[in-house]
Each structure stands twice: as C-alpha cells, then as structure tokens.
Image (tube, rainbow, N blue to C red; front, side):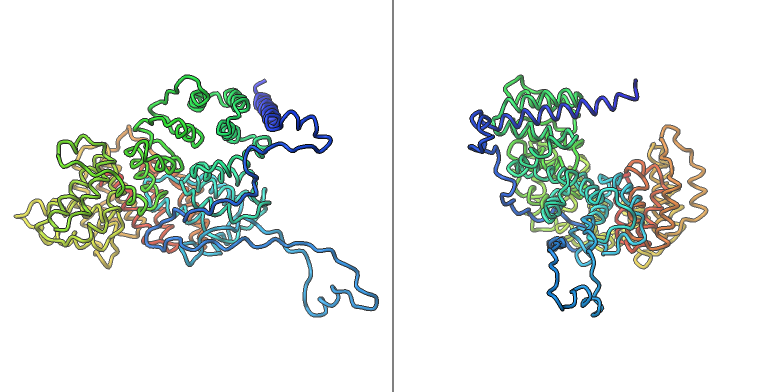
Length: 633
C-alpha cells in the first residue's frame, strides 16, 4: 500500500491541475462567447496582454567578480536555426544540384541540432573560462554536479567562481543528453539559487521561443517576479499551470488571478494549493488576508519564497528582522527593492546579498548613500539598527577629508560591522577610503582592523604596507605592535606569495604554540583550517607543526564532515588532465557546505590545490583569507 502512495498523489495532483485549469479557462470566457463558439462569434477578452508583446529590455547583469572585468558586453544573438526549404526537381537535361555540389567538394546534409546548453554570457575576454570549458568531461557527471552545486558559501570569491562557471559560453560536454535543454535549465536554476536574476533574464531573452522549455521558464519566472513584471509572467503561467506538475505555477497563477480581480479562480487555486502543499501555511494565510480574510501571522524564523514575498509586498506587511539571515539570495534581491516600507531590512538584505556575491558592491554603495543620515547624538546612534548605522557611517567616512577624522569614522564603521557580522560588505564599500590612509605609527591603533578589512576587500598590496609598518614598530618596548604582528601573521601568510613574504616554517610553529594555548572550542578548528589552507596554497607545513597540532586534544562535541574519497580522486585525475570545467565543478562540490568545509580540512586543501592547478592562484588565496576571517582568525 505504501508503494502506491506516490502514484496516488501524482494522479491527485494531475486531476487537481486539470480541474483548476478547466475552471480558470471558463472564467476567462464570457457566457455569450461560450454559446457562440461553434459560429466563430466574439472572442473572449484576454486577461493579460498577449505573450508576443515586447518584453522590457533587461537591466545590466548583476555580475561582478574580483580581479576580472565586469560584464559589459551582451551575449551574441542565438544562432539561427536551420530552416528546410522545399527541393524542386531540376529542369530536364541539367545536373542535379546535389551532384554539382559533390563534384565541387561540397558536402550536403542536415545540420546537427543546435544545443542550447552552449549559451552563456561570458567568454574568455570578459571573465569566462573559454569555449573548451567542458572538454573531456562527461555530460551526465557534469549535470549531476551542477544540480548539487553549493551557491551560498561564506566565501564570496567561491560564489563568484561558481557563477562564472555557470555563465560561461562553451561547447557542451560529450555524452548523451536526456533532455536537450537539461544542462541549460540546471545552470539557470543554480544561478537563481545564487541570486543572479539579471543574468538569468538576459540568457532566457536570448533564446528562441521553441527553446524556452517549462524548466527554463521556471527560472525565468523567478526573474520576472523580482522585477515585479506580472504582465510578462502571467501569460506564461496561464500556459504552464495546466501542463506542469510544479506547484510553483499554481501559486503564481493564484496571484495572477488575484491581481486581475478574478476572485473565483484565485480562491479555487488557493484551495488546491492548501490540498497539494499543506505545509506552506504562510502562503495560505497571506493569500487568505489578500482575499479579505483574517490578517496573516508570519513566523519569526521563516525563509520567504518568491511567491510569498509577492503577497507580502502586495499587503505591505512588516517582516521580522531575522528574515535576511534566512532568505535565499534571490529573495534577498527582492527584499532590497522594499526600501520604502522597511529601510533597515532592505539594507540588511543588500549587505547579505553583496556578501554572497549576488549584488555588486557598487549597488550596495548606492543603497548606503541613499539611506537617512545618522543623528549627531552618539547615544542616539547606538539605538539605531545596525544596517542603518552601517549606511550612515559609510556616509560619514566619505564626508571626512582629514586623515584622523576619516580614521575615526572607519573605526566606528568596523565596530558596527563586527557587531553585525558584516565586515565583508562594509570593507568593500569603504575600500577606497581605507586605501587613502597612509600607514604610520600614529594610526597603529587602527592597523589591525584596517588590515583585515583590506584583506577581505581584496586589496592585498595596501594590506602588506600596513603589516610591514606594524612589523617595523614591533619591539620589546612596543607590546601592542608585537601583539598586532602576531595577530595578523596567519592572514598575511595566506594572502601573500613567497616573493612578497618569505616562507618561514618556524613561524607556523610559533603561531601554533601561542594559538593553541587558548581553550576556546574553535581553537583546533582554526588551526586545522590554517594548516590545510597553507598546504593547499603550496606553502611549507613542517612536521613539527603537524606534531604540535596532533598533540592538541580534539573536541569530541565538534562533528567532522566525512571526506568524499571518490570526488577527491576524480578531482585529482581531472586537474592532472587540465580539465578546467570538471575540475572546477568537483572542487566547488567537495565540502558540500561552508561549515562542512571548515570541518573538513582535507577538502579545503584539495579545493585550493585544484584552483591553483587550473590557473586561479589569486582566487585561491582570496578564498583562504575569506574563510580564515569567517572562522575568527
């Protein structure tokens, strides 16, 4: 009996969809029109503009990566499909065209079907990985790894590499394709998971209409929702709600009917949603309020989906402050558009989206600059929400001309950033102001925070200048400078090459001796991460350092992430063969998630080695620094 439950649910879902689509169709047709269909009488008035209406041009893609050009060129138009023409018989006495072509060395035959999976927005000239990205890679394995590709790492650089991989225009990998569009659909779905909505809009707009399958349109609809473009989304929904088993289309259809004031169809859709997806009580309560029912109650820890956010925006409801911490990157982008109703929440969402690489830093700067300024009273400032303080302090930093005043404003900005866990976004927004300060002993008190901020923002050269100043100031008489030098050493060791900073294995042992004296639970995890990152970057990890760590007792309460022997072995073979696409996919899939990565130093080392093997040395160092800072180093 249990084995038949999925089949029964499938049939129930199919019957429900047919019942809803049939009812929805009837609500669109006037009674007089129904009586005269056989006589080709008046046609029903469409609920939405026809699908052929011109789609608004998409905005520039929210694409940004460190040390690579920003995306400024649109992808070329889709190659035209081969159109067959009727072949007429040649006139009597003339040589058939095929024979003439063959005599001239021209081969005639059918062109192979165009594989939409080759589409992309990036190439080798604007940040992509080149047309041979998937050379010597197995298609089925590529599709499997893309489907499970993590897109929300605590390392922004890691997320940016994953997005570059998915956006690269390249020949598809060899192997039999199940569905012709599957690889592209998987890439689009992962881009939506990363919050790369503008890129998805651009990609789908480049496709010919026959190539826009339901799986592809599912991601495109997410882009349209965030753009608040129901005029384009609803006709697509009307077509797919009766074809697809994805309940997403039923929820979007319910909202479309609500927007068009077709309450009968909207209420029927809501009843079917409650039957088919009883766990989504938030959508049901929001929809009930939208149709005149009791006010909805939002749980404090819920992660809003895009359909839920559409209803929340329609109802102008206040969201819990915790929402940005749980929202997906796509939902974060949608929340940044809600600045009028809740500026603090919109800024918090923008900070998290920027930290994930879903929002360009330049967009966060615009949001900071447009926020209300801070009051002059310091005590009142302390009561203001951290996102609004981050924005106000950014404005204060930009307004200061004198070095001392700018340093004080930056110090306040760092304090708030540490309090709210937003060092990355705040540092990248203020990187120009940080770089404008000259290293000097009069600013030694700021050098620790400033150097960490420069590192997380990717400005390694300026960070090195501050670190060298601290090292020169360190002496038996200057205890603070000595403390700062020890504090900054592990991050500088990961950030700098051997040419910039000589590799002294004894320094690692000295650092371990001091670091492992602490009894905090995360001490061993931080030390393991440091050694693994150094090993992955090709730096010396001496036997003495390994012995020192081995003697430190492990924390029995800290779970360890299981190593994936198969994937690590495949990664070794792929990097040895210089298979760029396969190597990247395996390396980015190794840990499975950020926290697993920090508990799995072998995976971290393997990922960094793989990135360096395919030419991403700078990115590997940036990832190591970002994860070390996230771990508390």
